[in-house]
Length: 398
Image 1 (spheres, rainbow, N blue to C red):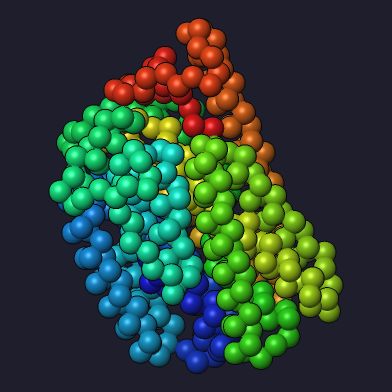
Image 2 (image 1 turned 90 degrees about the vertical axis):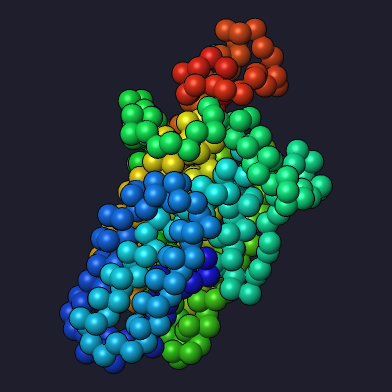
């Protein structure tokens, strides 16, 4: 996970260190390098996600790591624009669906209530390279470890408690089942808007030169926002799991990003302190969005085939936002990048409105079903073996 993050964020750091000059890149060729990465990354995402479900993550993940690790090592020997593009395309092919595979594995083991915290441990391993943690299978008592021999039984029990069944046979009809409702299209809008922020946060190192420091100091100054964002990510995940709530927690993160990008647009370049604070805010607000949204998606899908396909497809669609963020950092606007900041600000505002509205609708729908079935609001109906969100026993995770 460390490497899968580094291969995206390191280009912006390399750019501040003279990448374009060393490889003889001119004009918008740096933007093209960023864009060419996301094209195969998006195309290969869904099929790789479905394939990983069939062959198991224990085979898919090592193969991917060997592939994009080798291609990343080869990048250090590039001498021109064409070689860099070739390496980036190979990296994208191997990395496509990597996060989907890891998160699907987490979701098959942990409960809906625990899944986001454990997803964020994976995310933290990307954002703090020195952080290592071994996630052990747990049973219904969070503090009691499960022996390796019982791991499979616990995983199956988790699935049976929150999904339709244990079948590992892929079905296209089941995979597309969810797309007959409006839910996937709402999630697509949320995914594209928050991913514009998230992918842009990988390029904030290009904005840091506004502080007018040396190259080494500039790159060091990109570390602190990521560290603070990683801590905020873990805190947000703990609160989200504790309250079993996603939408409002996403809204809080988005509000922080809105403040950050508003400051980046309006603050004078000479105000170094406030500019650096704005970079902190923009980064901190973006980090929790991906794991929280992914947990939100899968918590509200009971069919395993639909869950695997929908998550892979939505993550692929979300990654297309990289094509947006990689082309709005206009070189002629260097240091200020006002177009990028404005687009990110608009994306954050739209995502905030959509997330809050969607979460409020889920709460209203849950109360309506409780009222019809004569249940108190705090009561949880039986969810074992429910068949989709239209099943009267199903309750949304808002």
